[in-house]
Length: 341
Image (cartoon, rainbow, N blue to C red; front, side):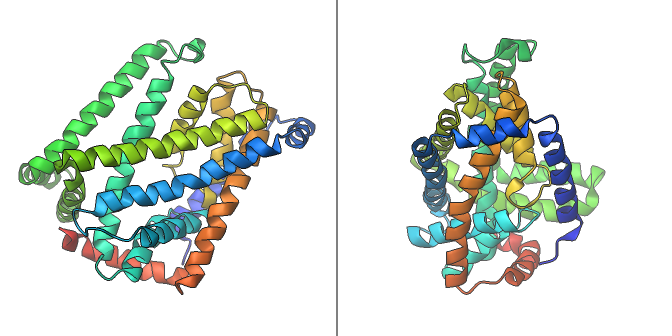
């Protein structure tokens, strides 16, 4: 795969953020913090951070169920692990393409376009739950009150905003034709060259959101998403304890929200640089020194990076995949999204 300008920009931003994260850090304190780590708690943290990927695969089956029922969990798990591995070694978030491609390659019943469209829904649920947990964490009495003018009002506004987004998603599901007509009217006047592509994307997205038509399936997706991010926050908190970082579980919920927002910008493979910068800034709100915050970020980031990268790499080789396959897959996605609808 070619890195491209987005990948190059991401690497440049990551290097700049890594320089900023390391600025002013006392490395003797970092090394001492790593020497004093509680190995047992850190091992539990890494296990929890790895467990979230089977949970993500299980949720993916529920999202895809209206399109391709009863997909084998093993195929979804292997594709999820492969996608995360590719994200960790290739820039420009190519893991999403790799994840969809691996599933369509292993199961002919799943088209690449349908698999890729389902990942947009996957990310929407992630955003809704992560941000809701983040805003909820801000209501914790232990949250630093001096950080914002009115923490409670920001948190409540954010939660209300997530509810509003959910209602908009329901409008897309139950009134797709009207939604697409409104989009066409808007795009025709503002960005006419995106009208057709946006229409095709909305069709595919509306089909992926068919999970919302069934209350039971919607609750199941929310449950698996909530469990996923509560477990990941637990992994962060266990790493706090292992590194003697004095921060509550709500700090982990808040920090993972900041990380989720941060990784939306271009970055290097594995989000190195960006991850450390966000951790330094986020933990700083809770009174954690820069040196300890960076020590925690580097230790947890590297240790949680290794298992899923190795697992995904094993499945990648076992299925006989190649990184060069993802380029044609991207072209297929551009031309075939409409087929998912």
